Each structure stands twice: as C-alpha cells, then as structure tokens.
Amino acid sequence: AQSVTQLDSQVPVFEEAPVELRCNYSSSVSVYLFWYVQYPNQGLQLLLKYLSGSTLVKGINGFEAEFNKSQTSFHLRKPSVHISDTAEYFCAVSAEGSSNTGKLIFGQGTTLQVKP
Amino acid sequence: DVKVTQSSRYLVKRTGEKVFLECVQDMDHENMFWYRQDPGLGLRLIYFSYDVKMKEKGDIPEGYSVSREKKERFSLILESASTNQTSMYLCASSLAGTGVNEKLFFGSGTQLSVL
Image 1 (cartoon, rainbow over the protein chains, first blue to last red):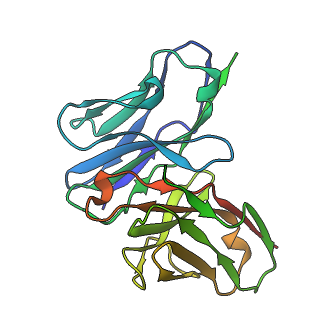
Image 2 (tube, helix red, strand yellow):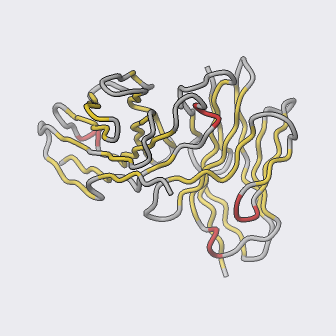
C-alpha cells in the first residue's frame, strides 16, 4: 500500500519569493508521483507528474518538482510566486504498473497563501 | 478541452434522505471516479468505474453506492444520508488503457451538507 504525507498544512509567502511545498511518500513498490492544484471554487488540475526518467520534472505555471528516491520525497518548488498561485496543492502517488486503476492516493493538501 | 460537470455546486439534505450526486463528462472517457474531500484529510476514493455497468469500491465505500448506466454519466448515491457524509464531493474522469499515466480531469465539486 502507498501513503503520502504533506508536511505543511499552510505555507504563507510573500509575492516574488521562492517557495517549496514538501511531500513524502511511503511505498513497498516503485511509484508514479503527481502534484495537483485546486484554485478556489474549482476542481483539481494536474500541475506535473513523474513517471520515469529525469528526476527533475517541470510543470505548468513555472512549477517544478524533484523526485528523490532515497529520501522518498517529491517536493514542489517555484523560484518566484505570484498572487495568482494562491491555491491548495495536493501531492499524490500510485503504484507503478497499476495501469487503468486511477487509484491515486492523495496527501492532506497544502494551502499556499501568497501575500502582496 | 475535457469538461466534467457536476449537477449541483451546493446541496443541503436532511438525515435519512436518499441523495443523488450526478456527474457527466463529455470526452468519451472510460474511467470515472468519485472522491470526497475533507479538510486535513485530502481526497479519498469512494468508488470508481472502468466501463458502463461496471463499478469497484475505493477506499471508503461504506454508506455509498454508484450507478453507471451510460458511459458519460456516473452517479453517486447516498442511500440514507448521515451528518458524517457532509463533505465536498469531486467527480473525475480519465482515458482507459493509459490509466494513471494520464491525468484525471476533475469537476468543480458538490458541497453537500447533511443536517
């Protein structure tokens, strides 16, 4: 079974500052990793995903994440945030090879609050 | 672009009522899912479906059932609503075959309050 822990429930940051949202996972098998974003009053959208290959993954809106197998982490980063990045961010995991299941295990979510 | 539409944004029901939450997707996706979202708990999978008339339990199916009579529509049913089912319900869909290698498309959610 897989599990995901997002280490911060809220992250306040000033506009144009860098940000890191932390995600750790647990699994006995190889995994796929995802970050989703939920803007206020909207559904979730895929931000980026790691399936294989390069451990540094770039996503939409200037976000990137790095897969670290030894530390079982998949932290999300952005070098300079905007007010419009204010949202809730979810890390998710699924077991590699679990094709056609869609059974993502989500973390608890991290609310990013960007202040002017 | 894919559109996943949930019929109600807000819903208020009374304890013991039978509740239907409807979800429709317009991109011919085979897979459809129902999650509930609670503060501090993230998203938890209730039920999912790979095909018409096919369903499988997720992680928290107790107190819920589903129906998929047509490919585009996936309904979540609360047979007898209880206060602990007050939550945000999110529907999602995805293509078959590629499974989790592809992204899930989410609806905007239905905030259900059971009084």
